[in-house]
Length: 496
Ligand SMILES: Cc1cc2nc3c(=O)[nH]c(=O)nc-3n(C[C@H](O)[C@H](O)[C@H](O)COP(=O)(O)OP(=O)(O)OC[C@H]3O[C@@H](n4cnc5c(N)ncnc54)[C@H](O)[C@@H]3O)c2cc1C
Image (cartoon, rainbow, N blue to C red; front, side):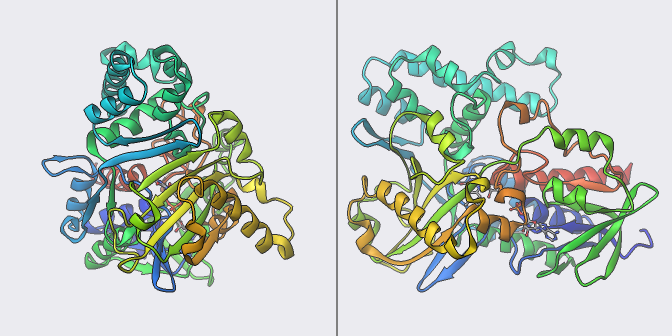
């Protein structure tokens, strides 16, 4: 044990900060967790309006896996001693995806069901679908093998041939019908890159994750997960400071040696783990210039996409409103490039993800009522130059455009609204402290893929470790895993 106040300080209680802190403390490392907000979770939180609880971020959780076919998150939560405190809620469908006047397809969350449904809607494609899904499975198998360190000469060449190709190219190679390609690539609206720029390996991974291991929710929403991880940390003896920002990362002799909090208190620590954004983390270095390699790296990266969300408490049941699936994508047309370009503007929303949290209830709405969120991705820059006096008017005007789009699949939904709350990229930025309110860190195109960027594994300041969406892949499963991975690596380096 060192003479420092703590063995580790963790900056930020987002998914990765929480799992890092809990893993460290449970392994005996005395850990302080510092969070600027007053609740744990970062994006993974909820809040109350009237008789409703509103989920902030979780639309579909990957990584749980069925009983007897666990994926990575069940063992992760079991490893933290909280697996039995969380109740997982399985969604039977992948999604319903709609372009009014063009198609309306609900895909079941299993390979055969999805294939049969697509073949029924777009007859004559059975053999092509079999080939496509076989490629999705094979490529994902080899991608995971490569991520886990399988030497390149032992990885099947199909991974190198197709992994970084735009998803659009691979879809074009398999199918002719543009509507079928749009149905199969609907998850691009989550991933933040249109199929023309989305690496096929990312689309394949998300399809594989949900078709093989199913989409899940958790009772009590993502806040229940965040609270359970915090409990695991506290029960192991960890210390947490909410409502407290880290203002500086203290260094000595080029090494991180602690933090300064916003009340001026300095806390020494053998190691610092940051769940904050990379620009903020490196900008907080005190007594050390940002290393040239980091400067060069950050200069080539683009702040990623944020989101605009309309949360609604509706005084009607999902059935009364016509919701048959938890997740529905609604797009105005098939032009994904145009939709992704629109995320830099406040032109009327062209594509939304509609989540109905009570088709498979997670306990957020009273009986007979429904919590629904409408979300479109959007860059923070779309709100540049909006005067404070105009902000409220502008955000409600933009929210109306999301409602216009959802009315095409659930006519009359406006009439059932009891509570609303609107979050813009500026809201995300205020609550998370991230530039642009980015929710997945940097823009996740091919240049950001794990083959090229690995801030997490190659930290440049001794004693400073990076965990979360800014140093790896964004999203729930990746960030929950990242915190554990970073903590274990840190612990191993001490044991060596
Ligand atoms: C509206 C929305 C919808 C989303 N939908 C999905 C989805 O359906 N599926 C999915 O997989 N992902 C989704 N995501 C993305 C996912 O939630 C995030 O990528 C993930 O939760 C990020 O986790 P993280 O560990 O990087 O930490 P973050 O959640 O980014 O949290 C970072 C934490 O650090 C704290 N912090 C920052 N600076 C300081 C400081 N100086 N001092 C102290 N604390 C600090 C912040 O307050 C915050 O709590 C969504 C996100 C949002 C916002």
